[in-house]
Amino acid sequence: MRRLWPLTIRGTGAVALAIACFIVANEVGISELMYFGILLLAVVAASVCSLYIGRRSDVVTRSLVPDVASVGRETVVSVRIGVRTAVPTPPGIWQDTLPAGLRGKAQGPFPALGSGLRGGERVIDLTYTVTGARRGVHSLGPLTVRSTDPFGLARRTMVFGRRTPVTVAPAVVELSALVDYAGATGGTLHTTTNQLGQGADNLVARPYAPGDSMRRIHWRATAHRDALMVRQEEQESTPEATVVLDRAALRWSIDALQAPGTDPGFEAGVSACVSAVSRLVHDGYGVEVLDSDGTVLVERIDGGDMTEVEAMLVQFATVTARRDDSLPRLSRLFAGISTGPVVLIVGRLDPADADAIGPVAHHSTLPLVLAATPVGDALDRAADHGWNVAALDPDGDIGIAWAGAVGRGTRHVLA
Image (cartoon, rainbow, N blue to C red):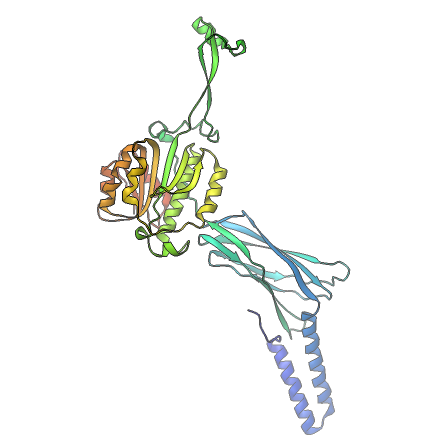
């Protein structure tokens, strides 16, 4: 906040003493006190002028590394200030205003500046570290610089009003891989999942047919089979997976409908969603991200394309809940199709809901459901239908819940 009174306690005392000198000099007729009072006022005025004359800021820019912050992870903020000053200025203290979505210590010493009459604009670089605290898009700034004159009589607070929007993405938790279940879940071998979703080009030999180029003859297979064979590339298909985030506000809380980062349960669900997508894409799955009503939250991401995963995090920075409840109709999205893993993240899960989503499990090679608020025996019922289940604790470890849900042959309900 900008202070209207430009003097420090010491400066205020000097002014009060000068006034007292004027009063006493007038009463007792001591002219020296009058001169002393004038001198005090002159010093105070000079101190104020040294701070308020000649300094102005033209440019204030901020940059972040990485450019998108994440909940729970550190981000380095670099601030560059262009200052013009006609006279030398004393050092001070700078402080950048942090929004509720970021935590950190954004303050430090501001250097003294010499006269800029010859050198022009002076550039000052400041650096500090922040940690993402709440998902969303927040404004960083303004930056303030507080300085005093060499005598400590006057002070000035400069406010650099430029603000910088900062996107805070949901936290991505490292989850256990699904490569151990590749054969059962439609996944590819680990050696082929590193091909950025393009599959693996496997050379196979087939009998020669009229019109085939002689350059494609597979001589080893020809010698082995005693018949002319040619090379043919067989493209391995990318397996499919689906992640469903149920955003119905009735299953989370009304806070999740208002703004990002306000409902801890919904935040855990969003983090579980992006973490599951990251894991599946890394394991080579082409992933679709849907709402329970079929709305596409993110365009399909090819297996291994981690660049698109980073872009997805930016989109999920502003995801909120919605009013309609469509979870009981989820089975319609999978009617008549078969797919790989299906990961369902939901808030409140009732026993009736578990029965409603039961048919989905029969269309997936690995159905998983993570429920933040399971009611009664809802998870047991879902497991009876074939789901791999786990409870999603907002204060717990998402990785543990995931590891329990992907366990084969047993039911895992983790608090």
